[in-house]
Image 1 (cartoon, helix red, strand yellow):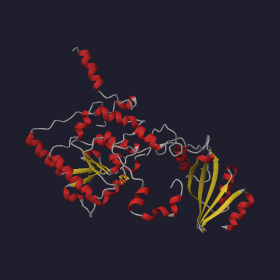
Image 2 (cartoon, rainbow over the protein chains, first blue to last red):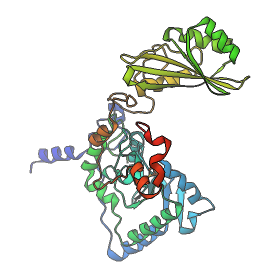
Image 3 (tube, protein in one colour):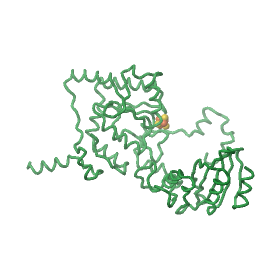
Image 4 (spheres, rainbow over the protein chains, first blue to last red):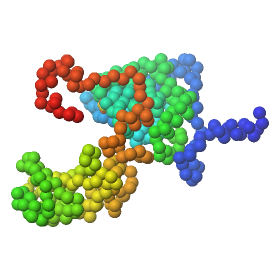
Length: 213
Length: 186
Ligand code: SF4
């Protein structure tokens, strides 16, 4: 291949960031997310154990289900017993709990926060609204399936699920992480175009970078 | 309250005053009187507080019904003032000079029902919907199920129970006799 062609392909691999103004374009990266390969078997196993035992959740509640996070974090259910702690910013957290329905306005923030979280990151989707729209299935402003917009590792069904079921969900998540099955982040990177297409189909006023590093 | 209503009746054309509770009254007025009635109520009737401004889409009559809910702190009485306006190219006088916070309600009505309030501050900015390009969603001829099916991805296998049938079958055998059941549209 000629050097010119390679340059061209590289250029196409870059994100267009067309939602940004010329000035803002210089401020954001235009590289794509890349899948991360697991390390060698034993090291990865150890790391997965460590990841599973220190889940830090992003304190961002998106729907009615977020009300269940308060008793979970405070003395009644005290999630800290399980090594799970709420964190204030996406950069510090590894678990994103989608607490129920996501409206268009929220999904925009969800995508932004999810992309800003550092890997490895996991998503728990709470409540029937995230699974198939729940009682808002016919609403004009509520999306029906969250898994078309961001990758989901665990669903907790119910409307709304009690903190106990959420704890059960965390247990399942830990199991899956230890088994090395929670690869949502890689799925996102591999099917990046598909996810972006879905997101851009509904978010009409796209005014953020294509990928928020 | 009776006195205030009497005074109102003498000054403006008022239709079917209605007493729902001791502290909740309804009156209907004409569109052209709106500002006059509201100003009168605010400055002479003691209804100094605008609790909310909402709209109802009366699509059968081709009208929007606006409800101004006022509150009198001295008498502790709510008074709802209802106005009918045309549905086609709906437009209403802004009341942000009477109650400054009304601009926010008007902005919401503009977005959700498409009722214009010329001169109201920031009325054209989006309120909760971001990047909305369809018909205002609270209008009753906007089909939200159709829009949702078209726009969002449905997960197959979803099933629904009609609550009425389900309750009749399972729990409340006498549900068919309950007074609510004959009503149209729930
Ligand atoms: S599943 Fe139920 S509780 Fe959860 S967000 Fe939806 S409606 Fe609310």
